[in-house]
Amino acid sequence: MVTAGRAYLDHNATTPVRPEVVEAVAHALSLPGNPSSVHGEGRVARGALERAREQVAALVGAKASNVVFTSGGTEANVTVLSPGLMDCDGGRDCVRTPASLLLHSATEHACVREGHRFPAGAVEAIPVDGDGVVDLAWLDDRLAHFVADNPGARALVSIHLANNETGVIQPIAEAAGIVHRHGGLLHSDAVQAAGKVAIDIAALGADVLTLSAHKIGGPKGVGAIVFRTGALELADKPMRGGGQERGWRAGTENLPGIIGFGAAAEVAIKDLTTEAERVGRLRDRLEAGLAALSPETAIFGHPAARLPNTSAFATPGFKAETVLIKLDLAGAALSSGSACSSGKVKRSHVLDAMKIDPAMSAGALRASLGWTTCEADIDLFLAAYGKLVAADTDRSARAAA
Image (cartoon, rainbow, N blue to C red; front, side, top):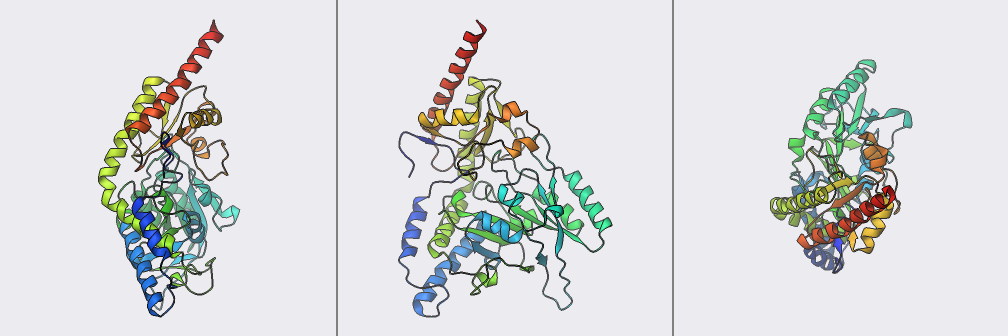
């Protein structure tokens, strides 16, 4: 529940749980059976779990049989970003070649940059341009040299579908074509993009996507790995045990969380186009308001394609940690970037990779909108930010006098 009188503009950190999800989770908590049990109660639980699998698969145009549930996006990423991820069509002569190089975009989430299972010397960052878009020519050239220098070797490439700080959308389909031409595999962290833009895993060409429920109005603590085909295998599964999730992720499934994930996915699909348009208009109004308050305010990632709900910006002379506190006291909840830094405000590696002036990036804030956002939220934020701009202008004028 969003607190009355406050503007919650931090949906990229966590989107408030939708009412339909609360209802679905409450029902799931009443189910007594273990999904792995063969009796009637177990079969009911299994049926509910598989229904959720279908709902999550539909969110990205995948087959339900290619969805594996995890404890969240981080676990999903750490699981697949392994040298042991291999593709095989199941034939007798299938050749399983582990990956010996990991390339990830320089603007990835920390769980990709630091959560992989490759040795440090086998990991390289793909540079991005000033808008935060990956350099496809660099990727093509690097893979060409890697294959030429290492006959028979293959690379795993990880490029998120959309950045969590700037909302910049990456050219995944083009990247997939390059990666596959050089015999590699492509993973895309779609945590921020899911539920905000239409996703078709086949059209993207990514071999595997990763998702998280709490970014689309579902419960915290549940995510998914989604494969484009059933041909991928993992030699070193980190969660071994009873064989749940077809052996990909052992342990009794988080049935209430998974059912909530499915409910959130279903709502997101139903409202996708109308919500994207509505939220996009609110985001555009927010950015226009910022420009009116201070023409020097920079919008990071603009004019590249971005998620309709995300705006990363900075006003010269502002410090993020100070502004965040003042906005919070005024009733507006924003972020300085990723929420996965134990509440700390620190320099953005995303803006560093984009070569943004450190003086500007020090004041970078992120407003991320969602299903609870309304015109009043934008009004509250702009009024609060306007007071900060006016106070700063007044201080500057007094100092110059």
